[in-house]
Image 1 (cartoon, rainbow, N blue to C red):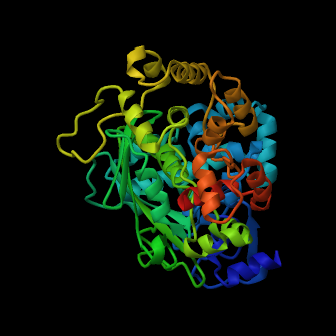
Image 2 (image 1 turned 90 degrees about the horizontal axis):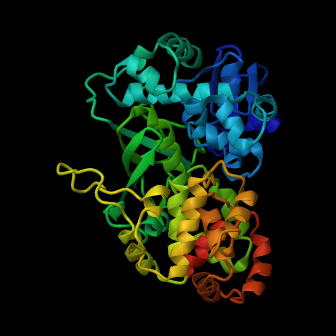
Image 3 (image 1 turned 180 degrees about the horizontal axis):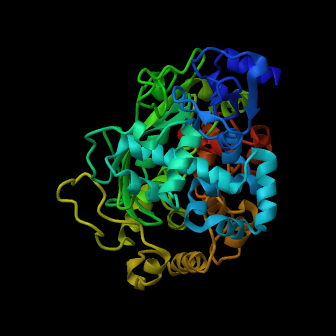
Amino acid sequence: MESYYRAVSSRDGRFDGRFWFGVTSTGIYCRPSCPARTPKAENVKYFPSAAAAARNGFRACRRCAPDSVPGSPQWDNRADVTARAVRLIGDGVVDRGGVPELASRLGYTERHLNRLLTEELGAGPLALARTQRAQTAKTLITKTGLGLSEIAFAAGFGSIRQFNDTFREVYGCAPSTLRREGTPVDGVVSLRLSYRAPLHTEALFGFLGARTITGVDSHADGRYTRSMRLPHGPATVTLWAANTGAAGSLGAARGAADREPTDPDGALGAGTRAGFIEAELRLSDMRDLTPAVARCRRLLDLDADPDAVDSVLAGDPALAGAVAAEPGVRLPRSVDGFEMAVRAVVGQQISVAGARTVLTRLLPPDDQGRADRPDLPTRFFPTPEQLLALPDEAFSMPASRRRTLRAVAEAVRDGLRLDAGSDRAATREALLALPGVGPWTADYIALRALGDPDVLLTTDLGTRRGAKALGLPDDPDDLARHAERWRPWRSYAQIRLWRAA
């Protein structure tokens, strides 16, 4: 605990999201970088999650907003049951289906799952979801003009009383205290999505922009916009960078992420290296705010720890120069696992541009008109059912690849999950069992849909070209042996090899 107290004393932002501390003399819990006066060591208690601090009777500091820090990298990268549960809770599974749905998705009993989470996070799934609901409600209160009763149910609370009681327990005030006047009610929520610096935006948005599908997503003037299907309805999101620094990296400045009206200056304290991505969400149902934010964060890999990744990759002299020149390269993921699986199959042995053309032909007609905002997407990626209903001539590809696409669509329709809560090893095996799905396709899906941080596509032509450009072996077997030193971050090395190509 001595190292934790040193982090608190120095207001070290690198530990934000790794632990939280409560001050017994005030009853408030904070993030390590909180700019408030450092409490005495004997008055400090440490917690593995914000929910654990709330469960122990502490309320969130309104100055440092400890519930809005970037998520812990370990829950983002690990593949065990606890990490998968945290990711599913973040996507709102408990809000939509309760703990029984979460336990069913993971294949464990509710009792065992509660024990696992409590042992590691200090709080069970209900407490974790409850803290998340409070954060969602706070966002809706400060960012929209919705009535408080609407906000209560949109955030997932079962009653107004539960909403009021939880809010007072978590934040120490009534919900109306944070109300902003005059915000229009139009389904638009503007947020700042926090991350640990640095973040190389050119690499991140450039990768996504090169793979846009006309009508579904677009990238122009530094803004990436796309349509999404969420549990309660369609949505569009626009994401762009703030606080741009040198070489396309963001966030070396001390700007606060997800700043609250009670912290107008965003002072996070000395040593904080944080930044934020601006997000504009257009939701057809406000209940989808939680999954929308979770999927945007996942798409941009905002919970990563770039220092941990870059320190490992820079240890290889062949990558050291690239890491120094472009720190904070992230792993672009996805907002929909099925979409990414289709992109992977279509992309087999053809160029990125060719894949974009083929994918556009698979889209259903415009789902919504936006005469008022022609810059917004008008189409949505097909569902498994829509893809299966397409005639053969719509696929514009060899018959074998068409059969593979239909096999993937049937598997997803019948229950195969391709999301953050999936068992990575079991999902890979299930994919490889499908006709026409080989190691490259399964690994590409693992890389981007499942978010596996340790995947390297050694047989990929772009990978081999990038390896050669960096002076690395371009033979797949030799490259695989060399890449052992990059574990557990080979997926991030993969992005750098593609950039080098």
